[in-house]
Length: 446
Image 1 (cartoon, rainbow, N blue to C red):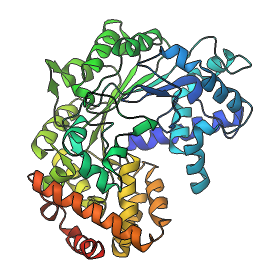
Image 2 (image 1 turned 90 degrees about the horizontal axis):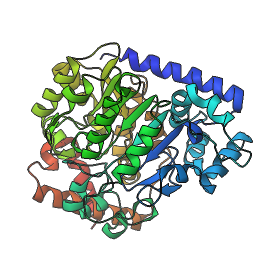
Image 3 (image 1 turned 45 degrees about the vertical axis):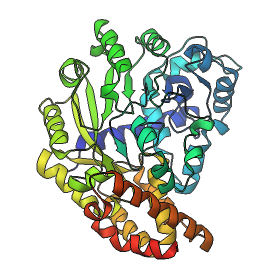
């Protein structure tokens, strides 16, 4: 099994940057409130994807007003005073559990390192900033996606919301009505929604001179016209030579809406990287990521791999969930054998993907032990540090009370049976190692 030395070295450099910043500004410091901005598919804005405390919404306010709002200023003021803002409580919780700085805080300090001193110098005593020095944008434009991936949510996939809302909610032990209430608000209408394109693009272009990297996120970024327009404007301004482009993709398409993403953006961009998602191959892949095809994925990966260089990198990210955690070797072998790419990352893509492993482990001891054995095996093989988060979560899972076990078992089994009836590939075909688990859940739910 090959190891991606580029990614390993990059993470080593991130640790060094993090240590430099915390030595200068305090052990709890994070650069994100000065140098980073994250926009959700519904338009909610925070400093970082880990936070779930919305600073404002780009569909209702301009981004400068959001990033200089009272709630944003409080975070910066507390951070400069050596405090631990409640806005960042998810990271504080992860750090308390692991004893280490969170993956996101280390990454934010790496990405904000170059701009941080200038950004802090522009900070007033109340935490407001006179001039933005954004170096990192983490952007979601829409929930438009041609996949329905187990472990994902309707916030990130209109296909889930349109066709499988009940089933995905039940797998995660939720009710369908509550499952649409992400970010403390109901998801907007219609089923497929898009953020205010003009506000997003105008602010990014206004920060382009200090910007070091943009990250394009889901639904499926390569299908989204808002991102095509943004990249066209950056390229027209010559910023494709100075700004690193990082994009995720499910690998199912490289051409869409008259745009060839590989030819039009990835190839001309000076420094670019793509994270191809692959949660399983063959029938397992089709079951987990409905819409997936080995053939299409291989075609996209090979096109990208042909352009691999010191400044262009394609890697693979696998979202661990209940349906692939016992077959991680299978996924890794597929990537190595058919693509020749190193398997660089195994980790939880969302809280929902992590929840299914922990929840099944709480009601099926055999599954919990088998999952941990696979996770321990891969802990030392992947640079992706959040694998430790899912290990800790599963290790700490306690057995549910009997009535909760029965309730979750019923929901899970009902969801799988419904998916089996709606889709081409069934659980027993895709994940034979879970057949006995399903039988036990059926008995438990009676």
